[in-house]
Image 1 (cartoon, rainbow, N blue to C red):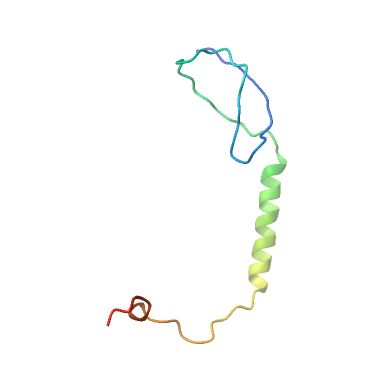
Image 2: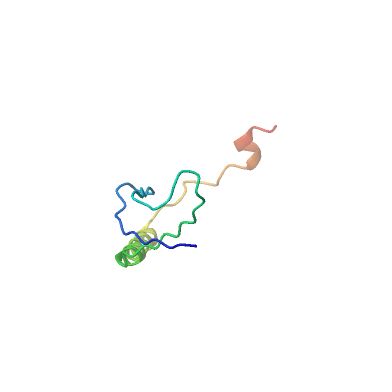
Length: 76
């Protein structure tokens, strides 16, 4: 097995395009993606903390009892 290292940037969410690889059409390859941007996890944790703080401050309450399953599905 030969290893080939390439560094690139993600240009669209969830998509990665690799070019210039030393392989031919039909070759079997195995790809391992290592995200080297350490700030991603910190940003995700900060967003989670902000979401939980906002959820704790929420004053949402229902105005009455929830409908029964039969009422929701009109099973009478």
